[in-house]
Image: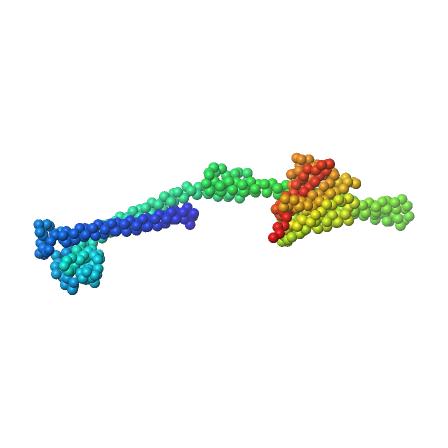
Amino acid sequence: MSFRTRLGLVVAASVAVAVLAISGVALWIARTEARSALDQQLDDRVAVLVTSGGRLPERRGVQFFGRFVPRDVLAQIVAPNGAVMYASDGVLPVGPADLAVANGQARPHRADVSADGVRLRVLTVPITPVGALMVARPLDEVDANVEGLRNALAVVAVIGVAGAGLLGFLVAGRAIRPVRRLTDAARNVAQTQDLEQPIELERDDELGELARSFNAMLEALAQSRTQQHRLVTDAGHELRTPLTSIRTNIELLARAEQSAAPAEAATTSGAAGTNMAVALAGDERRQMLDDVQFELDQLTELVSELVELATDQRSQAEPEPVDLAELAASVVDRHRRRTEADFVTDIEPCEVVANAVLVERAIGNLVDNAVKWSPPGEPIEISVAAADREAHVRVRDYGPGIPVALRETVFERFYRAPEARSQPGSGLGLSIVDYVARTHGGTASVIDTDGGGTTVELRLPLAEHD
């Protein structure tokens, strides 16, 4: 069943419930008003009969002390013992409530009774000296009016429900027209893979908000695809360089091996000049092997970072309280053993709730970046401090610095400044720092420093203590 049909049925059902409720209330009001009018007529007849004199007319009589006795009601007098002392046209059934009124034990009483198959509305009032006067009138007119109104309301209900269902079906078709446009647009995107076609739906209601959200999703998808394309392009470029170097060195090694066989034969026959060629080939071979090992290390690191960036699943460990001072000290000790750089530290204990592996890697990337750009003999400054409910990790070098226009760009994946193309690295280090910062609710930025160089700051929220 389509949404349009369901919406039409819902509208029809809602109208049906409303019509039934209104019809029921209308019938109840009509019946109540009709019975009230009938009770008022009985009160008027009783007033005429009670105040007319001391005796009632003979049966079928029409005149009573000069006044006309109403012929639209039945009158009956009941003695305290239940005996009917007078009846105008027929005997009315006498109940316990009527006897109570006749004995002066109850107030006037109203009731619906049936006599000879006719429903009657009866009013019983006490009369003097003793007894009760019962006045009755048929309910046929009331029942007929209520029945007619019920039939009319039933016809109106059927017509109203049918009309409401048809109207609901038409309104639903108009209401879901924007939804169909969204559906067609989504289907077109799925078929054509064209993310540059936004939906033009200028509305201020929920459907307009849905269209704007859909356009935002298309924009995000387009940006994601652009980033993926850039990732593949940049990754291909970054992978091509070490692969080309490895291929070149291996080809040279293969040619050296091919030339080594005739050289060995010449050595056994006493050719003197070839020994020098073999020795040179051995030196070159060792240099080439070192180059291959270096390129393989770079390639392994690059592939690992590519996989992590492509999946965004670097570590699934749960965040836990960690001391940034300990992580920073560990990173600095590790780099002191690997490099000859001079590290100056100013570290204060700062506890954060984070993934220790990710944060340690981010700090390591900051230090690696500083080591790469720091001139020989210049120190690298690392500080850890707390301020404004945040932990600040700053790493400074005294290198050429980063222009203000590029301070946001350096955190993008694979971005490398023109002067950095000749330097080792994949262009992923600072992007990983930015990812780690955002993952933990923090930020990474390049901040202004006096005296030249570059200072990169990693901010993380401090752990909250009870």
